[in-house]
Image (cartoon, rainbow, N blue to C red; front, top):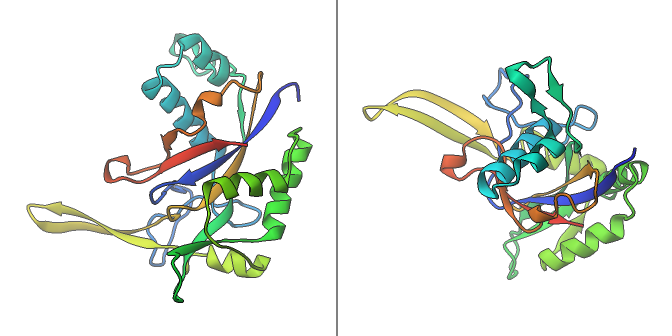
Length: 233
């Protein structure tokens, strides 16, 4: 791959709902979040992430149009069959750490729970795609950002913490003249979760402008969902 791979941490500062429209649920959850098809762990699909980053660079940072086209491509003459391919490759963002509340008497409100197997799987993927770094780099950067407790758990326990019964479900309601006309239940990934993503670009610094920025991802921006901090490793 003749591109430079970079790894980014994505840390939701508010609850995050990136919906999986292909899932039809007959249970409590009406709107589920996206999940990795292999591990079933929460993720952000590459297409959702790419769209959010492109919109942020265009609308918030007013990126040069040529740079936008160079990274994300374009549709020429309004025809989807006549397109220019972009130079950036976005991969799915994978969940690495999940915040859980602490009930004992400490000064901390929550801790980050993680699984070595999950992190190691992500690190192996970065190596295949040419990223010169590893688990130590992820942990070092996270220690800069988060001074609280981190707790290791087994792969099975981590998956249980991420299943539909454990993740937050928020009731949403549509009112008409003060009366409920549509009540639904929406699954979210809680704030302070930590995801990681590989982005490959022609030059290693093509997206450095994102470092430390807050990018809105997913649905419900007007009620404060999906505001995520990007941190480059």
